[in-house]
Image (cartoon, rainbow, N blue to C red; front, side, top):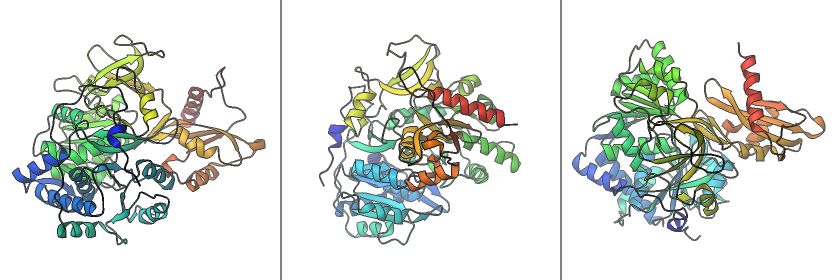
Amino acid sequence: MDRLDWQRLAHQRPPSAAGPAAPTLAELAVAAARDRPDAIAFIDGDRQLGFAAILDEARSLASALWNLGLRPGDVLSFQLPNWAETAVINLAACLGGYVCNPIVPIYREAELLAILGDCRSRVLFVPGIWRGFDHGAMAQRLAVHLPALQAVVQVRSDGPQRYEQLIAAGREQPVTLPPVAADAVKLIMYTSGTTGPAKGVLHSHRSLPVSVLAAVSQWGLKRGDALLMPSPVTHATGYTVGLELPFSMGLTTVLMARWNAVEAVQLIDRYRIAATVGATPFLQELLVAMDATRRTRLPLRVFVCGGAAVPSELILRAGKRFAGYACRGYGATEVPFVTCGRRPGDPEAIGAGTDGRVNGYEVRIVDAHDRALARGCEGEIQVRGGSLFLGYSDPDATRAAFTTDGYFCTGDLGVHAADDTLTITGRKKDLIIRGGENISAKEIEDVLHQHPQILEAAVVAAPCARLGECVAAFVRTQDGATLSTDDVVAYVMRAGLAWQKCPEHLRLVDELPRTAAGKIRKDVLRARIRDELSAATP
């Protein structure tokens, strides 16, 4: 199988300002192991990994992968929880110049097959059985359909090819790895496509750290501080903050493989956690757990909340329970940390009522005809800057996403105020954000349209008290056939989609509202389900 030319694919977009020169993660890891060999980089339950130990393990893994035939530019995928091994795998990829492809653990056959096929992954790391699901068996089933995939490696499992075997093999046959250029493609992370399959977002070793380091500097974190990472490290935020900041900032990441609010309170107390980043439900449940465990205050200096609607009242209430503050933030896989909440000295209202000040990007707001609007006007957010992604794995998607002068069209609506704060007000793109997880409405519609009794389906976001949004489906059936929610859920699951994409609300309709041009009025459907659920809530 020919290797994909990632460097060519990554330069399909118009030029934008490059990020500042900076060492790669591999170079930072070498320096940290030399200067602070015993300092703790990662805590995973009872396991603690120092900088020297993690570099040694990652070098062995990178050597083993090289001996398997991987070369710079080959893709290494992992679908793993927040485990210490995940940090080792990421560092090994950076040492070997392999392109890292994190995949969220909730994905199933359909999503995984599309992603691994698109990026031509050579090696896939999976758990065995995790949260009751056999990832190892799923990966083996898929491998026969993926000619580029050379190996499926199971982590914390007794599978046929195990992580520990690779580490041992690499120690027996170490390899002198070539240096990796900062502009080389480092990451391909897939984000929910709004008009088709998921899109592979490409970042270089240089592009990712720029805005993240600026954000962390704003939060006032310093060497020796600990941060809690409950957000999946297979998402952009968890990846950049949880897996990489220990090397660039000298921090310690405390990993949570599965969110549990009471356990989070205990970890924050035990390790004097300075910062964390999580979706709205995490912050809500953390406050509930504080009450349940009779904690009046936590040592958190900052909790950055995003990924779903964040009530201002929640931010203000949380700020009274922390040593520092809570705030909202905004970004995307393509443009991480566009904002990152308050800056020192900012009033509470900036963290609670806006998504924060712009974090080193150029931002402009445009109308429906791509004309720039004045500050304070609502329109689509366009962004460019040092942490801007390199492009998509699909050149056509790249060309469609950028303006001729290099701005990325986010598809989100917002207001850029005179004080440089950005407030997200809605979105043009057809996404459902469920507990911080982006879900493509079209992907679900494509599955529903294959159902023999469904003539037409429209999927929209419905409000959800805990998760912010969930999936609602409006369906026209053949000859007025009756379908239950359970029927539709079972069909979606059989199609191989993650269970989070199953409709939680099903409405059978005779007609779908349309524009004069025949386009389905999803704004009407969103309003309808919102009003129905609001009326049904006491």
